[in-house]
Image (cartoon, rainbow, N blue to C red; front, side, top):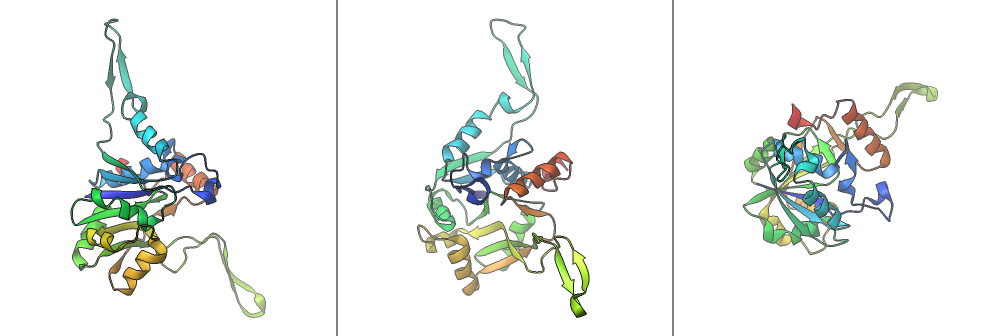
Amino acid sequence: MQVAILAGGKGTRLLGDQAPLPKPMIEIGGRPMLWHIMKMYAHHGFRDFILCLGYKGELIKEHFVRHTDWRDRDFVLDSTDPQSPKIHCLEQADEWRVIFADTGLSTKTAGRLKRIEPYIQGDCFFATYGDGLADINLAALLEYHKTHGKAVTVCVVRARSQWGVVSLGEGSLVTQFEEKPRVPDWINGGFCVFDRSVLAHIGPDEDLERETLPRLAEQGQLVAYAHDGFWMCMDTYKDTIELNELWERGEAKWRVWDR
């Protein structure tokens, strides 16, 4: 089962228009956001990835090429034989298969999926963004998708409000004040399963959120998978700080691979 990750955006809201690196390369706990997402999928047995690259995609390629050996792991340097010193890694490397696909500098989200169509194998595949973390059971998401016979399953979540919510009573008396509660509406959590057949109906520069998913909803081909656990999107600099703090405090609920 393949996992397509949309990793081509600039992250303008987070880094500005002249971002020095692609958004998925921003580090959380000393590792790129992209690494965290891939570790989540790999934990559930999904290790075959297609990275939909765009803005500064060469930096993502360079990172993975540079971090495939001793540089990213604990190791022993055995120099007892000065003519032939050896390195023995103490940690097993991540066993991933990764396709690095250039999907265009400014291609819209669904268009990026369309461009990897030649690389998709099998009847369905995962698709997600390069900025969301959750403790979702991805294997259960896939099994749910297989039960309903529709084209796409999208994970929906209840996000937290950015502001404190105030309830007013008679005479403008504040009856309740709640800091950043969960909003009652469901939103797109970004973890999806697509039937491969959907790709045949996507335009070369189509927008996933504004065109593809609304059209599928109108056709009765979009089903929601509700996730009530942890979910957070790295959309602003403040989000980056919060995610790093969660990691440092040992409260990173998305870190399912260490449970």
